[in-house]
Length: 266
Image (tube, rainbow, N blue to C red; front, top):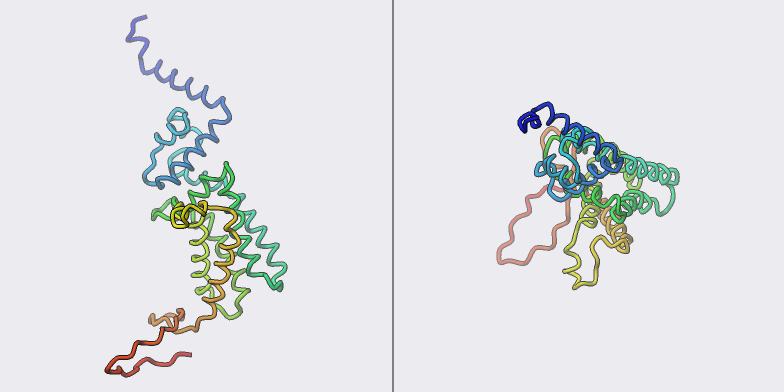
């Protein structure tokens, strides 16, 4: 057989198919692809990562990524589908907390149901990259990241917002949506931050689980303080939304005093 005959498209296709078949016979390959995708998406964001890079990181043939997961956006969503049970666990913990809504530490329990599972995930070898993906990959604008947020995380967010509103009778969902976002921001910053070691002079370790009580107390105290602020109309025409008015510090004395033209709000 001539060398040309050995390199025909048909023989190349057979070799390629055999390579894929051999790779699929290793059950860890599928998990390796998912882990590689989590890592690269977490480090670089969704748009900066290619399927080829994921295959290289996982050590598998390029075609095997598509064989298991399809296109890049399908692989991206497969990550959140794989970890969706962690959201179910947080919601189950929240339901248990809501059964004791009259407990004096109800707010702290709701915050713990939100914070503790993520900190455990971040500390585990299996969930480290997924936890970091939530801090990086879901914060960049784009259709796929927005789709993942809406499908997997928004239902949980609404459940926690409703639970938190029970702590503050009379507050609006709009107010609590801000507080939820601030709580989320504090949590995500804690699990992703590396700077705290430098700022503490080498005393603090990044994402240290020992800092959880401090984080939870910070969130609870911030919410209580925010809910104690007086309310004022937002000033947006045609809406009933309301914004928080932060009391201003006393103005410095000057030679001339400007008249106060602000209207008193209830």
